Image 1 (cartoon, one colour):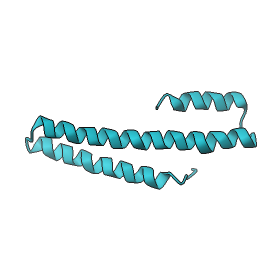
Image 2 (cartoon, helix red, strand yellow):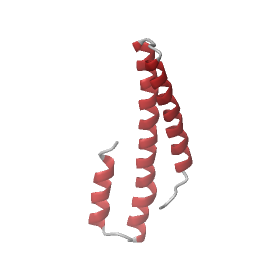
Image 3 (cartoon, rainbow, N blue to C red):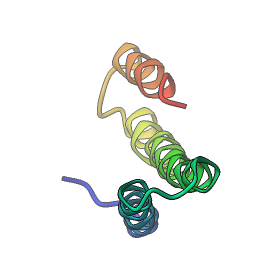
Image 4 (cartoon, rainbow, N blue to C red):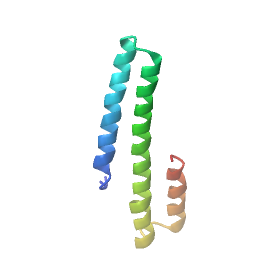
Length: 89
């Protein structure tokens, strides 16, 4: 498995999302208001989206660029991989 310099930041974001999600579950169990719950769910969604975007951009910037520059995979495979990963943006 390849580790990128962005992975620690992604992990940090995901752990933050995990904490928010646990908080949302507790809020629902405690009967908190829907507005408060929705606000916290938005925080979870935002943290996950930022982590995903960082991961995808990092993959494009490092893995796919490396594949093109070093010729470690064919151009067709690199283009297919680019198309596949960008659908998650």
